[in-house]
Length: 180
Image 1 (cartoon, rainbow, N blue to C red):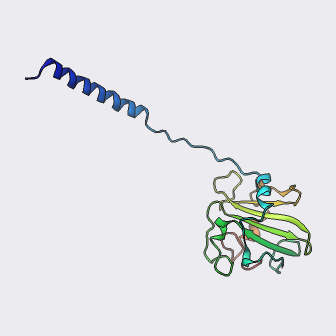
Image 2: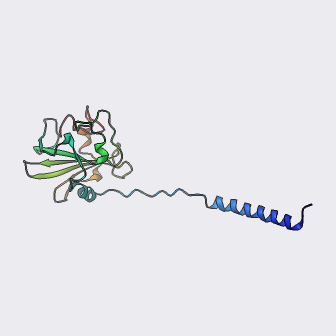
Image 3: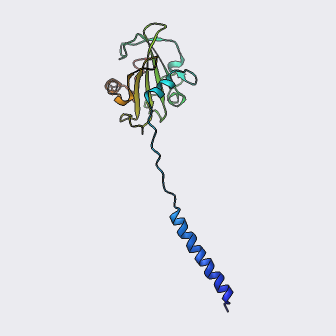
């Protein structure tokens, strides 16, 4: 026989269970979408100013004379990649064929007018969800050594993509054919 106290205990347990189920429904995790903080030209400039933690294209920080295929005007160039982008280099320091650079890849090309004078940083940064990213997720910028922006990421690579999309590019990268 069920006593009044046992019945009360069962009813209380049922009510508590129902309350807990309802509370769980109300506390169901709501996915919070945190908007991406857009990258700025000045943030890219800050990244460009240091060479620490980068890997040099072809494993050399020597200035290389630009090749005939380079669309950049200055005579000398050298290119460095952050560790994320460098994961796509082979053992000779060249970009592996068929590579797709991962999110967070940063490629910095230093343009020099002579063997000493840095005239510009050319920057490609892979941040797909940034408002200034092109269709392949790249941010493109030209920034002078004093930090003044020559070509802003807001242009979405408009002055760069036509050349970088030519035959033989690897995820918009032409280093292997028009070094460095």
